[in-house]
Image (tube, rainbow, N blue to C red):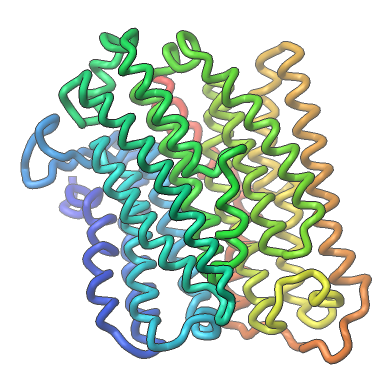
Length: 498
């Protein structure tokens, strides 16, 4: 194993973590952004190399300080964690390519060093959650991610104090979720005497019938559901996405909730096990209805929104419903669909939020009434949004279609009326998506512009990253061997297939 691969699991976390305090010392508009972009790109490179290595050679374990698990803290890079690390660091780097001019228009230059320091901490927290093999470390990194997230959201649009309210609401609800997770980890430690995830998993069968173990499952599932913004715990997400700086919204839409989906998958399939979670306990009966209600009701709610970021936020809750259904099906195909949708939705939704950010950069508004005729005024930005909207609907040749195709296969595998009902529900949700995407198309291309409305497209420094995300999303909608292949490999690994 090469020297890079030996230390790659910890390097992917340390690069942004150690860079954050240095970034806080920088001043100006260019240096903090450039420094943060370089560190994020390095983390992305390490994650990419690690993914290919693990795909070919199997999981990589790193013992911090040379202390062997279960006594020492272990980082483990397996097919699932590597795939999610690549998503996080890739989305982060793409957003940062867009960030220089965008964030300078929303945050004062004197605070940019602190802003990007918090950004790096959020990135380090997400990467740490994904790669750590220690249950308590998950909580530690979650708090690093969460605290920096509250700061980033609070730095929202200038002179708009609703960003502070959104950050406070997220803080209160997020703290409840984190407390539930900590209590769940505490119960597992009480029964097993270890915090190492692999060690807990090895002992879980022997404690699964005890009340503390079952309480741990309850606390962990609910706590992660809150962090995940799973319906009906999604109340914090629309405000957080609506009033955060545009690059923060794009970054979190592609990463933060996806990390929580990863956590739910990790605890259910690695620690609790499929038989206990979906056989002994009725997690399917709990998660499946919540997922269906999410993708139906939130798609319907999105239709009636007048704030474009808020519309996309409710759409995100609906898409999380699809991921929840994939997990609840407890099958290899369903799990593949959920993991694949983490990747596909991250790319598409990040591109869409960056498009909205470009509209805000030029027009100073994200309200639909102010964006009438935007298709003529900002043709390149508007067309990128339309293409991203097609992916949300699930039109063929888009990544949204690939995700829904895998999920459709999984629900039809059931071969019962519930499976057929789920397929019909997915169709209805997609029709709702057609309606709310068409609202934007109609507004952009068939409505006259308001009198005196700004015209002229976004600068190329914003357009190029937007189109990078859109074109990459269409690439993975056509050539699926990499994305679907890695998702299938991760699902087989979690389901215990040889």
